Length: 190
Image 1 (cartoon, rainbow, N blue to C red):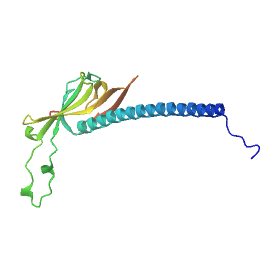
Image 2: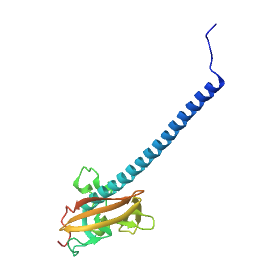
Image 3: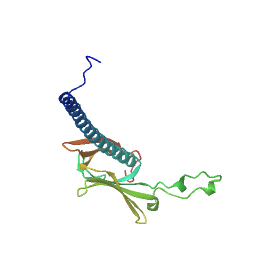
């Protein structure tokens, strides 16, 4: 076995040092990539939640019967920090299929007992957008629609037209999302 030679101790140590250096660099790159991916995912989730909240507000507003804030007397282009309106309360018993006309549920949209008041507002202390639903009997339900908010503005654009703006805080910047809403039903008294 002439001419067969192995690695010396110094060559083996240099090769292992080179391998560990490359593995260390790869681990650092993977950790940085993971942090960037987590950050991007959290940012997308925050923006998605804010956009969903705006769409939900627009849908609620479009089915409203009467807008309380900003009210009918509010000036065009006036800005408000909350949105408050009345709409019909959605209850499953009102949408039943019945065989006879006499079995129809008795309800009247002009009756306050069949309405619900919805209020969207931003809670500055917790930086959340809240939806407060209050029934005629006083029973209230509050839900968080979006978090990490920096502002909420409702602008009256014209007769039954509104612009809803929600500003969301990210780590190093803020982003404002907006959507237009229209009240489709003719309001009471108008």
